[in-house]
Length: 300
Image 1 (cartoon, rainbow, N blue to C red):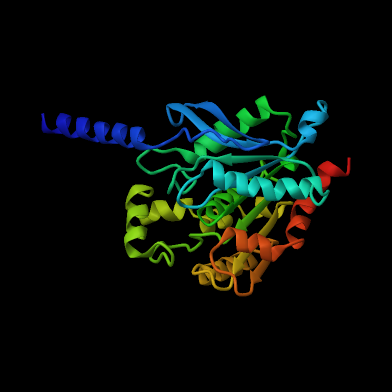
Image 2: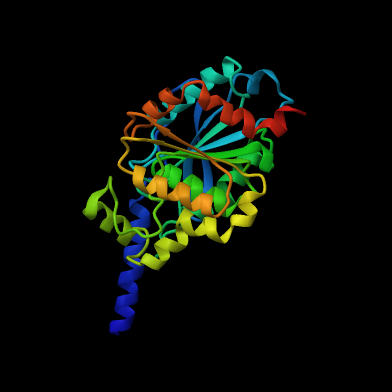
């Protein structure tokens, strides 16, 4: 009887946790940016994302477009944050600095860590790889192949871009890590979250299991998949020298060097953990990354 009651309590707790997650975010009342819903088996309900399409998506009905998957940091996604990034990149597209592309802003929850949680209550990796990408390719005029996809993110999103890009290099032409973290092999410290925040993430996402954290980490995935990652995946790692995660970013760069994984590392002077300042400081250098990543699609 006690065992049955325990199982019922666990099931109720898992169901309650699933119900508490906000999978559908507000509409985006911004030009070129729309909220799109897709039915997710992983979440057992509809899930939203924000989609930006360039002007040429409407004017050239035969054209297919590359896709940039932009993963947000901790705190979650919102119409305003997605619109801010979309506006910056949309202006670059209109100016001819980067090829026109579709931008996808998935919902990774405020602290989802872009992975499948150990207790099974959240399956963000499964959702992105098995549901969202196929949905986008089915419902939008995408270049539905490796050469037509880039995955990028800031902070927690950079962690997600690294772990998903390195785990599935057959799906992406390029991976961009901006102020990424946590990149360390062990989650003993969290310079930005602090001990309490680290404990909460370790418990909620990774089930309090350091071995499970390591198994999800870009550090270990890079080791396991190094040979495949070396075969044509364009990688950049950008970090401000006033970012609290600088030390771990440097160690991760050294780790990639030791694995002989080609990548570009750039350390920005006087820049803290702030995505707008990172992109502002990169300036025109930012756009060369996307042109290089999509070279195979624009040269045809």
